[in-house]
Image 1: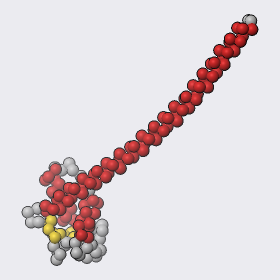
Image 2 (image 1 turned 60 degrees about the vertical axis):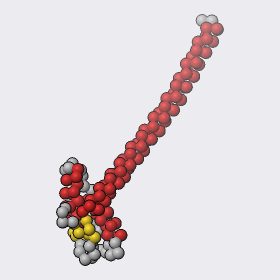
Image 3 (image 1 turned 180 degrees about the vertical axis):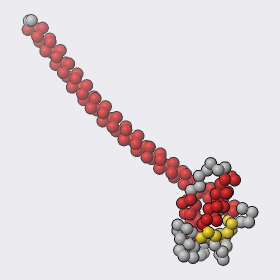
Image 4 (image 1 turned 120 degrees about the vertical axis):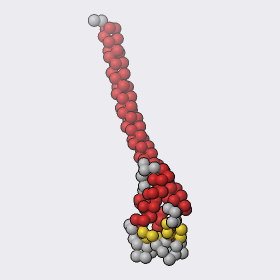
Length: 144
């Protein structure tokens, strides 16, 4: 082999080594990009789940508000148990939307306590039961 052939082979070998190094750099960068996209995707999925929860709570609150306005009347002298209110709300949901709509019990409690706090009587544990088992000064309309 003459010197020029060896020189050309060495240059070709250097090119291959350089291309291999460039390839490894691109591969490493691609791995970083993939990991970044994976983490962004995970973050987006969490945000979507949170947004779904918020939308479900907002929908539950609107349904509860609709039921409340149509089926309850304020009564400063009487309280209604959460069990009776929950039964009335569940019946309302079943009649309005069918039995395939899930009733969010916690949101119902939260809204009932919120409405009780808006009255001049407010919500007082003991008088109005407890936060886990509230009684409120609203009575169920007779036609419910």
